[in-house]
Image 1: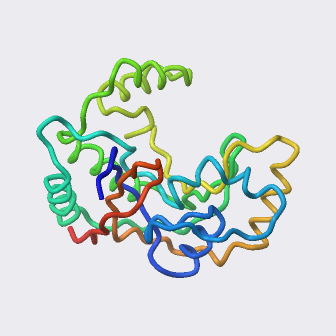
Image 2: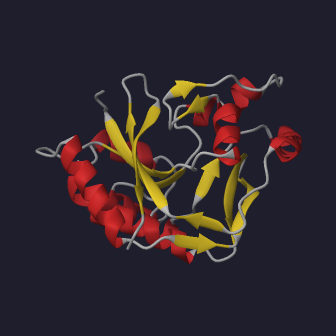
Length: 223
């Protein structure tokens, strides 16, 4: 299968959390298939924006391959990086509001997870194609800070390094009067969250022609 863009994600391993995320969003990125969602009024709309990405945490945001690079070379670079990067552990995950959407975020010290993300951004950036002027303009419509604009110019994404905040998106933007409702719905249906949370693998994912992301390969962090 050919892919238009690639990214590095944390994709939860097989288990209750991965099963919940796939069913909640209606897309399983590990298997690359649609999943029947719970019969909940409004869920299809609430989950529409994050659905194509699948349940994940972004470590290196989607990018096009640089001229002369190919998927095999990218896969080799990810494997090499994973072999030199140590796993990360934190106290656990928790559900949080981020603006008007809901996500799982880090509980406790996030330094280890941020270290893994920074390694992904830095070590693989030589295979990333520069952003086009249109892509830069689109990103800058988000009212970036001066530092975020610097990071966008250098790394192709504004929310990296010290601006990085690990999160696993559960919803798109929710109307303010509906946030409490969906937070309760999620709390009632979500499995026990990992405590501690261990990130001991990363996933190379690709964007298919239909815009949905599929896991290509998972790599253990063994550094």
